[in-house]
Structure formats: C-alpha cells, structure tokens
Amino acid sequence: MRFKGLLSSGRDRALPTPIPRGGAAVEVASLHVRLGQREVLSGIGLTARAGEVLALVGPNGAGKSTLLAAVAADLPAAEGTVRIDGRPVGDWSAPELALRRSVLPQSSALSFPFPVEDVVRMGRAPWAGTGREEEDDAAVAAAMAATEVSGFGPRPFSALSGGERARVAFARVLAQRAPVLLLDEPTAALDLRHQELVLRVCRERAAAGDAVVVVLHDLGLAAAYADRAAVLHDGRIAACGPPVEVFGAELLSRVYRQPVEVFAHPRTGDPLIVPRRGVPQER
Image (cartoon, rainbow, N blue to C red):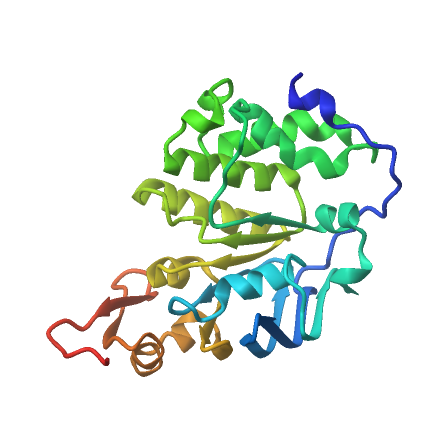
C-alpha cells in the first residue's frame, strides 16, 4: 500500500495561525539539559523570530544538536522552558506540535525501501484529518522541486547516495509546511551546489515568514545566509547576533581552540573565516 493511502485521522487539533513577522516563534528561557550526570546545556536563553534564519554554530560537543532537540521537544529540559508559538512545547499535543515545527535530524534511515515520493509525503502526515489534505500533492511536488529530487520519485530511498538521502529528507521537512523549521546539519552530506541550494531555500522560507533554526558547521555558510548566529561553547551561548558582529577572530579562535582569521568578502562584505595555518594549536 502506498503511503498516500495511509494518511487518515479524524483527531481534532488546533491548527497553526501565522506568526507576525518579527514575532517570537521559538522562545528558550533558562534552559538546562542533562544527559546522564552531565549538564550539556546551562542556562540557555534564545529567541527565534518569524522571518529569520538563526544559525547555531560552535565546536563539536558545544550543545548545538542538544539545543535543537530540546526546542523540538525530543529531549526534556531539566530546568527552564521552551515555547513554540507562544506555548510551552509540553502543552501541545504531538499532532499539534507537528503542525508547528518540522525537524530534520543529522541522519535519516528507513527500514523499508519506500519510494522517494512516499518519503516526502510522510511530511504531510500531521495534516491528515484537518481538511487541508487537498494541499498534499502540491506541497509534495513543490518540496521535491525545491530540493531537485523530482526525478527520484519512484526510486527506493535505500538506493540513494548519502547526499541524495539528505535532500529527500529536507524535502520531507519542506512538505510539512510548519512555520518553524529545525534543521540539524542539513548541508553536511551535500556537494557545493546543494549546500547553497539548501541555504537559499532556508532564506526563501524565512522571507515567506517562517522561522528557521539551523545547526551549521560551515561558518562561511552561516555568515552568508543567517540573519543571526548563536555561538555555543561548553553548553552556553558565547555570543548571539548578526554574523558580521559576532564572527570575530578572537571569539572564534577561543571557542574553536584554533586560531582563525576573519576577512570581509570583497563583494558582499560577509565574514570569511579561515584557519590561521602555521600557528601551533592549543592542546
């Protein structure tokens, strides 16, 4: 049976309404998250606004993915609050939360060889029974076109390369059409063209009024496409603001424990960050 036929539910749920541009789509206050005995996030405060791309950057183990998972309500907070669309995430039912935020994890795996189109169509599952099912076909087609996977429709997801799977997973998130996008390293497996494509789509979604929170390791991409960047370090936010303001050589060298140099792009003025080679690294 094709996945399209499985999307049926009569469960009532509150549908999302547009968040005014500049309004708080995600609010994090005094957030602490513990994994086992270790406190991974310590007192995080952060707001993601409708109409902006917010990049989470920082070294391995800084807490970026943990913060994204806590915002998605996939990890519980030991202390503090996370709000989406004005309400604590725990106050939304699972179907209502799925209408308000879509999540792209670092990796996507499926146990069965679903066709690519069906994988993208899974993003429409939260809308089943809401009276908006007539939008499914258009949403799926638009998402596949935006990520350049339209030609993959009948192919099994398991037969795709890593980069192709990443693009299909991103298409699933786009098809969901939630006003908050939470993306964990969406460019890690992609080539140069498709890294740019994914971030351009993020900018388009922000221009349409969505809030995009994206974990990025590539500081150049964050500088070029994010409205604001939050630099995480040891479970705290070391700085947050426009990349041109927070991507300074001193801060980044300290946070990454790697001397860097920061230059202004000769055409756009965006910060370009490169390792300062030939300098001994901190141990």
